Image (cartoon, rainbow, N blue to C red; front, side, top):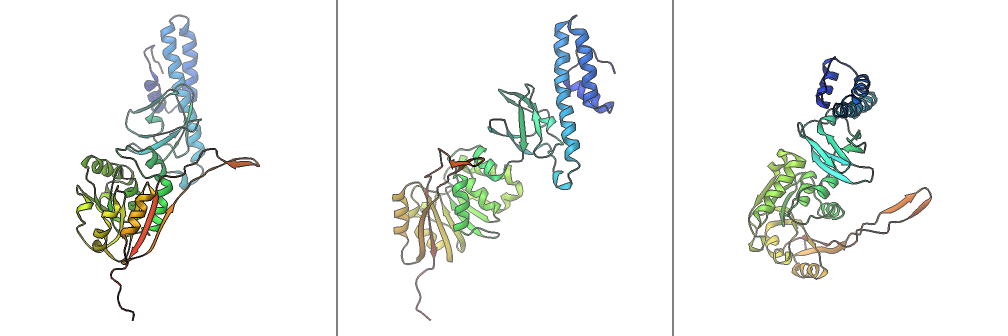
Length: 335
């Protein structure tokens, strides 16, 4: 092997592949060459040192890959171009990115070439060019909702799961949703297996929601996701919906429309930031509705360090009130 002073890290990596050499052995050879030329030409010496850093990183990844390969097929979901990954640094800061050819993730701690992640398994720890370490994982739905691009304020995970529970969202559930926003709730219900007809008055929000759904769930999820640029206050086309889910400033105005759109026994859930909004929703539910209730979810984490335990000083308290009611239609005479 012979490389002149213009060699860079990418050339060195090709040497590793073409000569089937280990990164560690090539790094040692470059380190020796770099020491010899540094005194003669400092610039060339710096180039050699950059090559060594890149090769040391490759060596580290070879060790990780060798270790993970013996742990069975469950560990073999390797990263590929187009995958979304979550990078977590030593201070637990989280960064969402998509792996692309020749891509790089940059931060104040240095950068990570996407190529170094390709072929690795979840949980791999990647060093940056400055020696900082990032753990690489596939983002969960919770991760994606918190980090995804947004145009409107999203419903946070602490409310997403309860909404799907009290609305009884499941496979083949036909849902009418209005107030789409950035698509967090849509994404969650689609993940549960529902099909959604949505009304959104802002086209940019609708486009953002569809983009986020496609990005996380895949293009096939759009087959169960139809958004129309329409105002739910003016009415709902269609009948026999199983569920109506609303995230609107005045959801009580949609309750009469929901009465005509829902099947008997269907559920309506309204997400409202203020209690006065929740009161008006409840008032709009007349004798055709039963089992009405309003709840609030408070999320408090705990600090646990050995036997020293206490609630964390900060918590996610109020975000919104969830109001649910069940539509039974006009009361019929008892049998």
